[in-house]
Length: 89
Figure 1: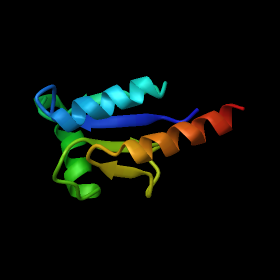
Figure 2: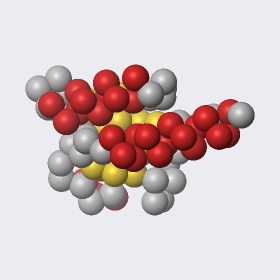
Figure 3: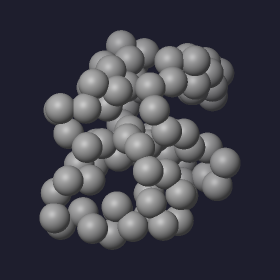
């Protein structure tokens, strides 16, 4: 099973909200991590320090080195949905 994590800056981020809605509509389960939450400092360091992103949302698939992106990317969500359906079939 593919694991998807969305690193978000909360409900005030329209790109974060749209990304989560698009993932839900595509039937892709995901874990949501709020980067504004003080307990998530290690997650914030991972997104900024390790991955190099400065804008949310950041979507990471299976913790794979090249399977992540930043911003609202319905094209990549569609590709991920197709990949998941192919692996389930």
